[in-house]
Image (tube, rainbow, N blue to C red):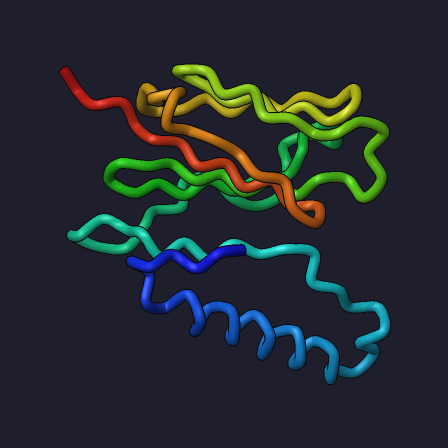
Length: 139
């Protein structure tokens, strides 16, 4: 991944990831431990920390596990994908919700704020889907 010229801490986060991998690798029974993916979000509201308003286990077995973080102007969703999907997982970004679709499973995440779809996107990397949503400007 290319470093952001406006993000002076990109190298630090890259090194942090390597340190965490080394810690996990040197833990007892580390042959069973794996780092599937992670997301470090450095953008946050100027007045405080980002808020996590949903995390934890899915409400039912068919739901794809996810976590939502929100800042002043963006919403970030991180979802864990199944290890062996038959098809490529996709995120359908709508103005008021996001649908994460993997094979025959779909998880709908309702959003508290309207989203600017043109400036929102998702990325799938090593079993983790990161979705970045730009909040629509209030009129």
